[in-house]
Length: 215
Image 1 (tube, one colour):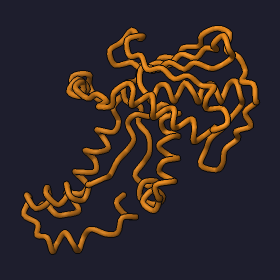
Image 2 (image 1 turned 30 degrees about the horizontal axis):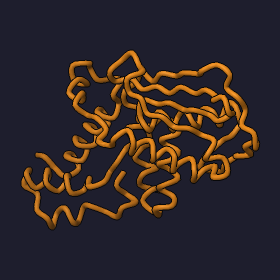
Image 3 (image 1 turned 90 degrees about the vertical axis):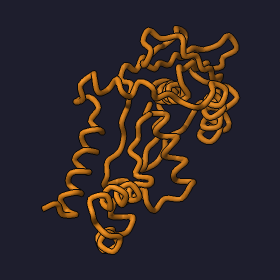
């Protein structure tokens, strides 16, 4: 007999398998090849510029952001490159906005010794930005860089406002995350699946709890 508890276990186990992309055969992963960003290079560039303005407004004009997908040796790889310009600015080129944001944070960490975290930020950026004399390039060969877990989403994120979410999205971009866990609309999908198995809306209403317990 299929019960609601058994169905929940089936659905949750399926989600766990899909979230562990490295364990999936290449044949299955290829079904995700159609996934592309829907944002134009100019939109991605502007998003990174706004991120920088939020984080280091006094230095924002000293960072030059460029999006160039073609400068990488794999169709699905991401990269960033950092170098100083002749007038002392820092140019960050990335294959995507996320990659460029990661390049920006890479510079902050290793040239300005900055740190950004949930607990607090260390952003004592010098007035004159340290120079990057030779181009520094990093390639992300992992197409999907996954982040988060069900407990944090349920116990913390569900209570966030937009200001806190914006900080988290900025942090994810600066750490190269492009595949965060998202439970948006999850209960709606569950209801459709469970009703197809013959469960009633009344039974579902008795089972589903508050947003802090989606995990």
